[in-house]
Length: 286
Image 1 (cartoon, rainbow, N blue to C red):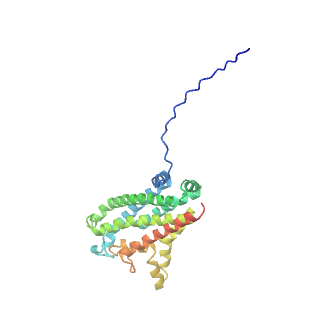
Image 2 (image 1 turned 60 degrees about the vertical axis):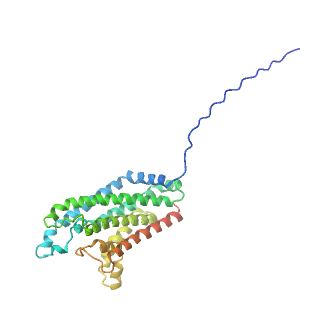
Image 3 (image 1 turned 90 degrees about the vertical axis):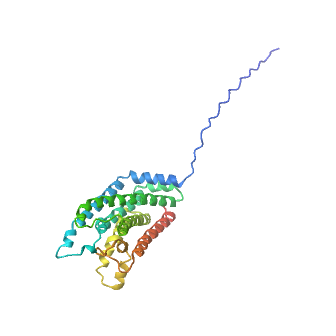
């Protein structure tokens, strides 16, 4: 009679479970904002555009300030009371508007040209936070470059303006109207360009459209001597900005808009462009 022996293998001791902290994978606007901020500041075109803006503002302000003595002497003989030094400091704002507009365009169309927009929208299915984050980053950068540009222009023009007692006083409300207005119009123009870029999705096409709106249309319409055409021209962004920035009237004015109406008109361009860009981003495929 055989006996069968059964050997029982002891169970391996249970491994202690590792308690790893759960990763919060929820999408937040702060995360979207961080990504857009990194993309904006990592582009060489951003720094080139910002540097050009500061340089253009300072050089054109210097050139305009150097013309003061020609304005005050014969044959011009403009009374010094009709001039305000702040207008010389912001003398290059029209070309500064162009450079910040290019920055606004590149911020959105650059992603379409490289195809990165597909990855961006895949990570943020809601899409609209992407545009909001881009707009907020653009506002911060544009406001910062406005301040630096104003500081540079103020410093380079001060020696020339001081000879004629035209250095803008920093406790003068008109000085801050010019300085604050310039920064506001820079931001509004950049946002308008961002919105148009979201609609057109093509760098060259959007830059052409923005430059046409800012510079080409006013140049063309001023030669059409028809009353209603001249009235329409005053509602374009640059003439509307002049209503607020032309504090003395010597370097331009707007007969149809008050200063604050000019602010509202330029702001409306930004709002409409961003609304159109949001609709396009939401409804159209990338």
